[in-house]
Length: 294
Image (cartoon, rainbow, N blue to C red; front, top):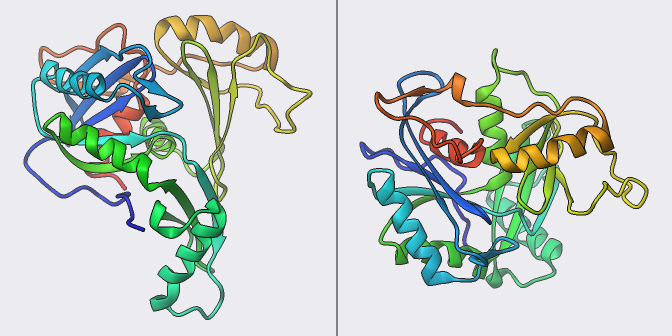
């Protein structure tokens, strides 16, 4: 049961290309540490082949590898990339038993991962993220080994060096925190991620696991879902998706849902401007910031 990387990527003079391979488009951002938030040095967006991805799994492997190659080339090249894995298959917050010696932590966590996924350890990968130091609480995220190997193989087929695999929701949260001005203290964050055929509402709260709900129908299933739907939050996505979902969020859930515009907070290399069709690439931004942010 190997672990995928949630640690800082290895230091290098070459840029870290943060790449979000979404269901409809692929986005790339690379930042230089020219300010607390960084300066955008490379930027590109490219349409993803129809049915290239399905529920986060790669379906058209060769076409997706070609798309990845073309995206990097259109941004000016590079080899070191960071990719985001789709929403986690299994996730749970765990408290390490009192008195458990550090040398026994890994074995205990492996047992927790197997129990959570109901799958043998040799078919899984897992990672942990600290939530609280005393007593120690960790967020345990577990995925199938096959899923992670698919994304590793995609980078290899594209001739690129995959130096970081991170969780999609985690880097979105990192980007939101980085864009807050002044820098925000731990608080509730609500983000509506607008896509072509669905809207995913994310919620992060201090000390709790990330939560999300998908909205694909004509109205939010308020009665059938016990989740408390938030009234208001930020809206992110392509301009077309935000235009479609914004009024529906306001009508069904109430509150304000302003479109998140990260570009005024970011500095840009001379001569480089954001593509109009890119929208708000929080995942790509969060991945590129991982070059120096935990």
